[in-house]
Image (cartoon, rainbow, N blue to C red; front, side):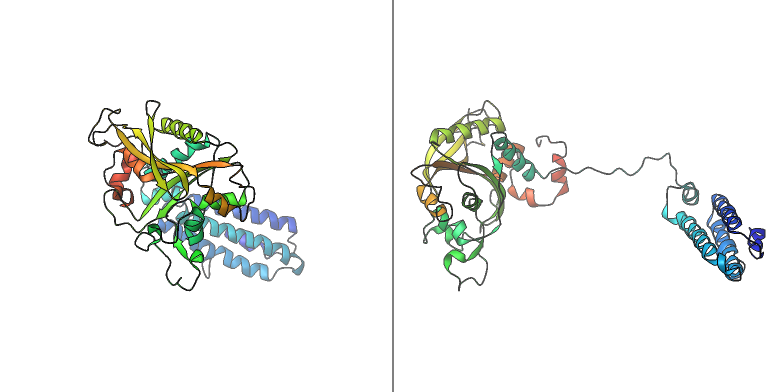
Amino acid sequence: MDHLVDEFCVDNFSEDALERSFARLEEMLRTEFARIKTDEDRERFRLRWVGRKTGGLTRLSAQLAGGRPELKRVSGKLFNTLKQRFQEHYHLWELNPFSPYALAREAIDITLPGTRTLLGAEHPIIRTMNEIVAVFQRMGYSVGIGPEVETDYYNFESLNFPPNHPARDTQDTLVVANQERRPLRDRLLMRTHTSPVQIRTMERQPPPVRIVIPGKVHRNDASDATHSPIFHQVEGLCVGENVTFSDLKGTLDHAMKEFFGAAVKTRFFPSFFPFTEPSADVQISCIFCGGKGCRKCKHSGWIELLGCGMVDPSVFGFVQQKQPDYDPRKISGFAFGMGVERIAMMKYGVSDIGQFYSGDMRFFKQFGSGGRLA
């Protein structure tokens, strides 16, 4: 390298000769770097090339400064490229821990097994919710989403809840503070069900509508083995001409068989919900004992799972304010809703809903293979 640096002072140095000499210097740079085995070798490499007084690049810079003016642009560009190559090689020692040089310095045994990157798995609640949604998607339903912070109008009023309904009480609903000056229908709260998305969808879209709505909801419930102030629901809505209660029964019976197995049976009992009329609670035959009766079904052979009913004409009356096509004299529909945590607890044999939110990895690792809990 030293004799090459000294050659840069000749007066008759041509542009081609400059390029050839810089190429030779770069080749020498790579050769010397390949010989580095220790930190001491690396330091000698640095001093030889960029030492303050005797470094080859330091002396070369001084030589080029006194060269012919017409060659300074070319020589400067070549010099900067060579200096950049030195910096890349010098820092490669630290930045590439798997290079032969770093392996020699760190004395890594490359025959040992590497660090394994563990693959994650869906949270059991999300997995269950996706499985439920997939059942209805295969039946032609689309998926809807909506805000978790809702107005009283969409959460209660448009769903036919009267002003004095107990669900509006702050003991049952989590309301946003400092809303007293607003009209009741404009006050904000944490949605207590995903039903507001049904109203928002109908306001945007004329019938027919077939939609399933998964999402998180909030209620002012004390935590215990079966209750949580935050949980998840999947609701559905089907609206069109000549939609009947028989369509509702057939849809839910098919969905339950898809999710729990072909042997599952369903039955319907009269119930009440402000936004459906008639309304019903749906029970399925116990998936643990096959309907024979056990402790989990309280020896009845049946497990109550969800609520449903035909959409109350009053609900269509609210929607008509923005979407006139929802005339209850011409169309009808049904709605249903189920709690995801309850179904997940049944499916995976979980006895305490709080385990889903505990963050205990010992619990969640059991779901990595997708099997039922022991």
